[in-house]
Length: 323
Length: 174
View 1 (tube, rainbow over the protein chains, first blue to last red):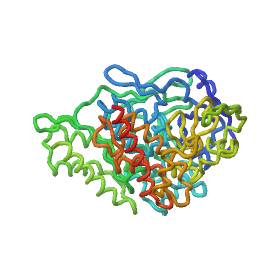
View 2 (cartoon, rainbow over the protein chains, first blue to last red):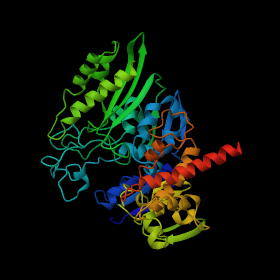
View 3 (cartoon, one colour):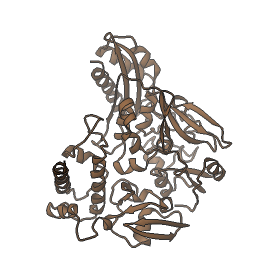
View 4 (cartoon, each protein chain N blue to C red):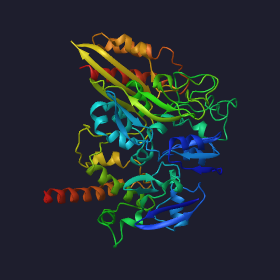
């Protein structure tokens, strides 16, 4: 690990003051410390934001404000989350291990880096780690890689389960800029596609600090998170889906679907939802939804299985939820 | 950098490089070598310790971030001889090489509290609780602790025995 300066401010303004060029905020550190050990990331300064009082879940209008340093464990165990946003509790519980969820935070989960093995292997080229150096996944082994939103420069998956559920829930990210001004960004606008700069993953500006995530009023209806992976527990998704569905007179009146394991960012395609809304649930309809979801997918060698897997997951999930 | 925390009830003050992980601080600076370094990347769980009663991977945490915390390592689970859980591990042959055992013991100790606190898991049928430590729940909740010797039958039997005893005591108290 490269040497760094460690600072632990106790106010937000103190955190901004400490966060100069080359500084990185740290909260749980479960991904960042790993990346620092491997020297994939080498910040000059770590600004510890774990004691800024951002660890509360509070009412926010008809919804909830989840502080940036609320741990994944505490969020999944919160009774309001379990009752009103079960898709989020389920997504959190499907991720990582008990130990990691106790440290991993809400803001950190959103900003965790891909688990593409070439990103972690500093002996190989990676456009995300070193822009312009190339991508070792091309010509290498592809499995935990994306089929949607990719470019010729990068096909790294976004690994989060939590963010997938939050995208289906229309969550908003609350940010505080270096000058102390607060703003909100819909999760739909938070992640960038890799294009020719896969190192730029979000629309955050330098010095921005995530202070929380805002969940809108509860959606109601049925909610589920289904995850398919190589082993039954403690593994990243091959494909996953967060789904919320409301039925009225046997028709689908409202539906939101977000996917993990297929996109370079937590994936949501409103065209899929538009097709389903107002329709009677049938297998043929769900298969057509799969066609729309995957119409722009690039199925590189080794990733073809994701096409079949995500279509089956979509059909199975919607069948179960609309019965 | 000066850092103070409590380990197994005793206060410690250290002056350490911020790069030192909690695991290395425990093992190399405080000579508490019970917590083990397996993968050093949060994948195996051999380094599991309790911080303020909750389990974490000590390898993925910086010691300086734990100023003021109360830390419990495997050495702190057995102040007077063996704890009931440790005796159950011995009885049920819950180890072969023993390298993962300290992490298994700390993790299981935290699982008992998570169950008592009504925390759901990925395999829980409902999110309402309360939850019992069934074999399926145990496998899911302990999935962050890998045993390379694959002594899971013994590990599970030991933990389930203690969980059942505790449940029996709770019932008797009611």
